[in-house]
Structures are given as structure tokens and as C-alpha cells.
Amino acid sequence: MKQILMISAAVLALGSTSALADQKPSAEEVAKITAVLADLGCKDPEEIEKEDEGHFEIEDANCKAGQFDIKLDKDFKVISMSRD
Image (tube, rainbow, N blue to C red; front, side, top):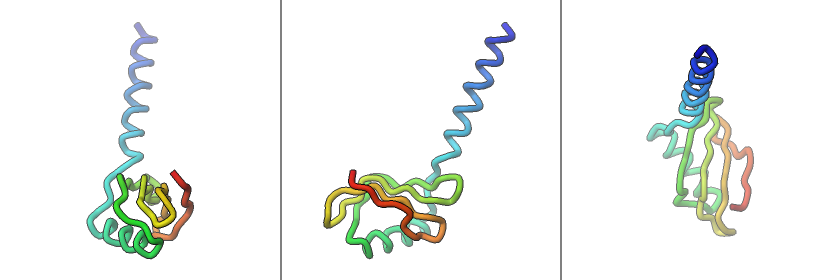
């Protein structure tokens, strides 16, 4: 019984931390991200998530050179850009 309670607590803890990991950015942040994407020749991302450390993850942005996943730091500077 004790093991079941410990396993249940661990599962709940893991589930709650992953829920905190990805948040929706504010409208102001989305506007800044959209401007950065436009400067890169990209638009219409499938999803934008804000991570705990303040980074932004943009998935499946449609760019002139193809579809890319892009990661921005908290100051909206490109950390990585990889072809999807």
C-alpha cells in the first residue's frame, strides 16, 4: 500500500511539473514573436509556447525556406532554428 501511494505521488508530481513547463504567451509577447518571425521571413506558426525559463518555442512556422521550429530567448533573440 505504501508503494502505491509513493508511485501515485510521483506520477502526480511529474504531471504537475510538465503542466507548468509550457504556458501560453501573453498577447504582447505574441506580437513581439510575430514581429521576429516576420523579420526572419516566417509566419503562421502552428503553436507558440512559453517555457518556464522564459524561452519561447515556436513550432512549424512557415518560412520562405520551408517549415521551421524556432526557439527564442526571453529577449526574443533566436536561440535555434531547425527545419521541421
